[in-house]
Length: 433
Image (cartoon, rainbow, N blue to C red; front, side, top):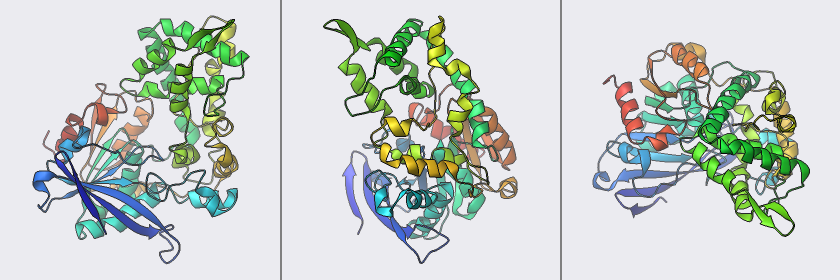
């Protein structure tokens, strides 16, 4: 039974759906999906078209808005919105260190998680859609990884899509994970350079922290082993609009003078562990590289291997001279499964996923070339998370896709620029601009 309730300006309804774990075996094991419907209070009784939102990630549940925040306000002017927790996230049969052991050992867990990629998410949407829309197609809004899923949707089930809107999430149709990270490290280096240009005092601050971590065994209050590589991974925030400023504020309070010697302050450690821990979304770390798996080649910890081609990211080498310590970006590494208490029980599972050679294609180039669904995509210039050149090549491969290339926003433009970003893309898809 669906439960409805109110927040300012919006009526919300909780929905629960049962879907097959493997859509190729509809009579087999099932999992539960959760989604929250949102409709404007003054339109609750109207017959409105539906918009389904696919969150970025992978491994994150849908936004938990309060009232009509961010882009949701614009969407509610004409849509009933479905905020879907993708399988394994939020309230949709979550996949965590606490739940995955129910599957059995590491091999069983890895097999299970192969069904948590974009193709399964699209099939989930298609299982849910007729129950809500009566069979009518809906508008799909995909942010980041949600955009990857949207391109898969156009490949597998375009009949379910009335309009597609993608923000920061046009994937390469054929790049291996190695190609993705070869493009990513130089992009990340540019973001780090821009940060140090803005805050030159952070060069010495980062060097001091890195030196401390190389010469001390630091364990954060939650049990996270805080290594220099973990510190460098805080550069993940540089891909967002306010990330450089947040990183600067983090670094300026790193040390406190304790009796006899300086130590990393409790305040710094508390902030660092909240940024580093995958306790809330372990699926991100487990399946992150698998979103690029489409053939018989294993992903094989691509980000870790490719990093070796960019020695400038070696903090110890940087400290032997006077150069800056470089932060890293959106990468997942094997050491994370040793450092993070939330990931340690899943290390063998992650290794097995990295070694898999039976990934199925996620995109149908022929079908995309014949696409007749209106599609608009925001491509953020020099996006740290999704390579702009890869995105534009895909844009040219999808018939009728219209792009808005902008440097006004970073990857989180849908949040930072809402509702203007969504308004522009809907107009672009409708050929109104």
